[in-house]
Length: 217
Image (cartoon, rainbow, N blue to C red; front, side):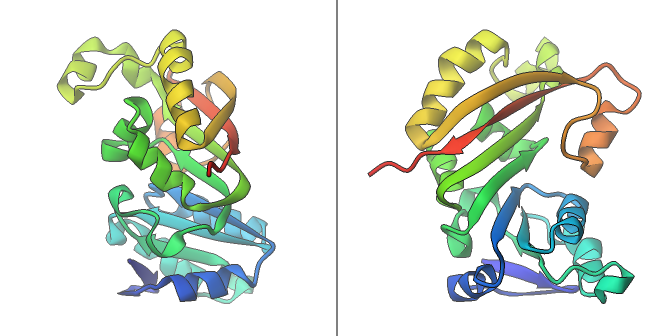
């Protein structure tokens, strides 16, 4: 696994991650963070939290990683960490760190993992967390109203009945206990660049799935 040190991509081991985690009361991991602006904002607003953004594309996070290195008075955030990793490579060095796990408007393999759903990848997300962690997933549910688009992506529908019948039990087997299911119109609770582009000036909706991690023996 690798991380961004400013513009440089450097190796990253679990020992380093655990040492960073020990400095903070809380740890939030944002999987599929994109440009990392959500991570930077959360880190600035919550200095007691190590905020980790994970994305396969290092270049997308570079601007935020560079800003995080500035002095706090100039917008820096020493508690922001940007990790370069595909979802399929998790948990890696991040195993067992998070007490909050978020996925904001995923696409590609991460979207497929949450929607089909793919239990091994859900278990990999669970492996990022501490016992009794909380999770929040935000999905662009408007995409699933376009049957032609779904066929092109080979994704199943995402109606409320299927969420309850298929997603909730599979999530539970993986260790994710869904306690909240909401269809949101307009602004979502997490302000992300991608999320704002999705909902601004449109009738698009967001599916919120939230709950707790339940470790299994």
